[in-house]
Length: 280
Image (cartoon, rainbow, N blue to C red):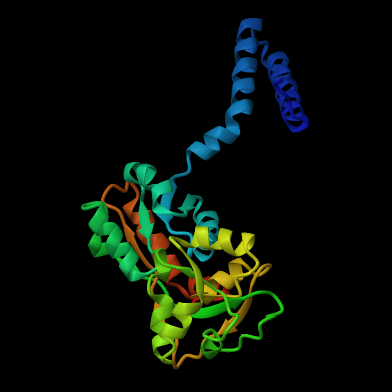
């Protein structure tokens, strides 16, 4: 059933009173009065839609990893510039069809991810606009309370440690790069209980199977999963970092706004947002 809000009734009542005053003051014919009344009614109903229609919308697509800082940046930038910035994130298969029609910006969870995307969809990314935002480092995510007392990468090859691995998306090769610096590749490989194709599946596995003890992931993911993970940092001397690239598409209708949004994320304010979510 159609519901009329109290606020709408109040606005409509005020308009009717105002129009009646005009009618009496200027002796408007009843037909003209009714026309103005109907016009006022239509304007009152559609005023929010009219205001929304006047706003441009930027469409941004990419993987789930960098979603938090990019989405927070989008809200602030949008509010300050009276523009809507809609960020759609997750596995590429879920948004690529839509992105091919209206994407203004595409970002990656690592440099190789955006490169792979551009290779898979020739002509969609404007390579001249490609910009590196900020880097993020690896960390070990463990269960809250750290029941297996995992303190460093050297603890992961120990007996009884069950490791979750994401063998794809932005984490491809991440654990091996870190483990190689401490010569524990073989030991960690033996303790990998299961590998997943992307982070979304990895999170689902971590939630559904409590036997997983550790996950070499990006530090940034801990801030998205604080309720189900505890952070064990990896020292800078052996850490591995991945970039966060973003580029304007060749099909954008808002190139100037897209460029300004990138510029905003590169400001001190933008950098603070990314650091809040675990970027350097």
